[in-house]
Length: 233
Image 1: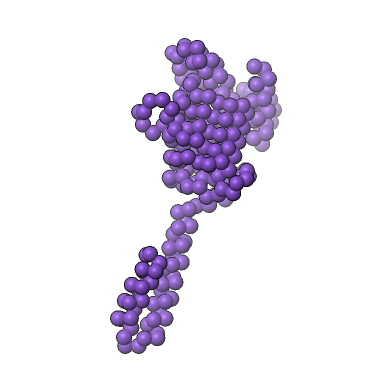
Image 2: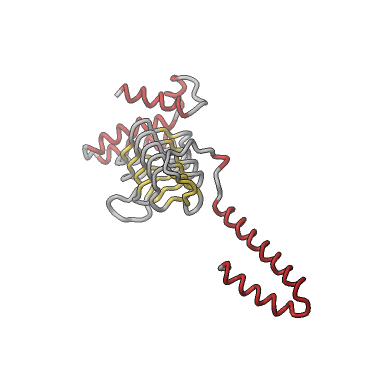
C-alpha cells in the first residue's frame, strides 16, 4: 500500500511542474485525495458493501469536487490535474499512466445496463472539459483535446479534437505530449477548403466573362453547372 502511495506522489512530480514538495502534494492535491479515497471505496465495493462504498465516494466528491464511482477500475500512475468537475462512471476501466484534466467526464449515454462507460488504454491524455461517452475503447497512447466529445471507438496512437470527436492524427507510432495551444481545428480547416473552392470558382467565372463577350450569361450558367457537377458543390 505504501509503495503505491509513494508511486502516486512520484507521478504528480513527473506530470506537474508546479509541485514543489511532498508535503504540499500530500495535503493540497485534490486529485490525489480522490484517488486514495476511491481505492478505499473500491475495496468495499468489491466485497459488496455497496452503500459504504458510495458513502465514501460521496464524501470524497464533497471534499474534492471529483466524483469517481466505487465500481470504476483504475490502473497505476493515474493523475487528475486540478480535478474539479471530473466524473468517472461505474463501469469505466482506466489503464496505466493516464492523465486527466479538470472537467473531464467518462460517462454513459443512456439507461442501459451492463458495461456502459468507456475503457481507457495506457498512456492516454484527456484534456480539460472533454467528454468520453459510451461503452467503447480509447486506444493506448491517444490524446483527446480540450472540450472534445468522443462518442465512438478511438484507435491507438490517435489525437482527437472537436464535437463530435474527430481523429486528426494517427501515424501508427506513439503520439507526443499534447500541446493545448496548437490543436488542429477540423471545422476551421473545412471552411478554409470551401473558401478556396469559392475563390477558384470566382476566378473561372471572371475568365468566362472576359472571353465570351455578348454570350457570357448563357456560357457562364453552363460553366457554373459544369463546375458544380465536377466539384460536387
